[in-house]
Length: 280
Image (tube, rainbow, N blue to C red; front, side, top):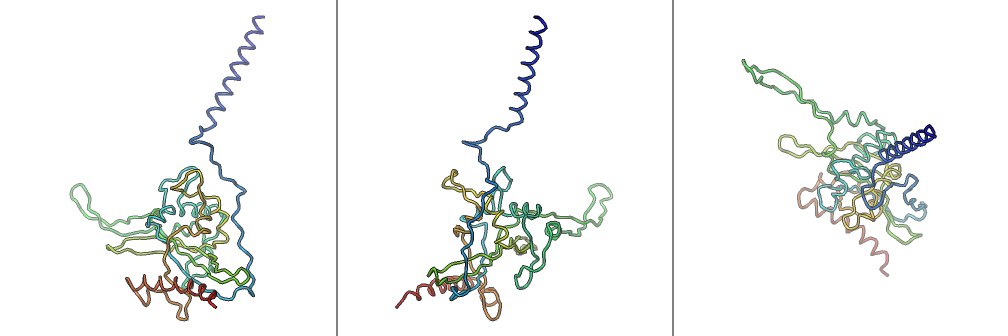
């Protein structure tokens, strides 16, 4: 009887230990519910386009500045959390895992030469030669090299290449984003220098962006994804180039306020074209 009692006690202690181990292994729910990203979540399919239905089209290049208040959802958080990453970290993680392909920057902004994650990071590792002075006697000078590694917080802009077109079947002006390009902002000699990193096919990146959550300042229970932000045009941007015979940017023939006015003129001209179609 005594042996039976000891066996039951040992079994109970073993079961209690296993239960405690399971509780320790399971992380507590940090919120109202366990917010899990649906791995099978897919982006809304693009509408089918027939060449015969496109009666007008124009290619536009835009730039989104993450420093604008409405666009800060692309820049933050600076520290990655469980289900919340900044836009550039989301892209770099997907690039590192081979889920998307990056293309080298070209003068024509075409997706021609694929580049790897290591090449992207390696190109942003700067080596600056500098003369240093020792802190101990005889305080002699010596040459050294200061290495600056890739800093994702320096990516503060995003370029978008998109096609606007009028679909005669739907009788609607529509837009389709073709490619996106993260842009790094650096300071050299007190001047701000923009350095585009690489181009991505937006159609290829949509599966990744459809599973990346974005902060919703109005309702945390209805968080959007980066794909929905692009799809619903929930960003502020300005046009820096339109398709033209000279293949030049606005900055090549206008500066300052004139460049902003030219950007607005291009935007209004497209909507004016749509309005003119309905005038009889």
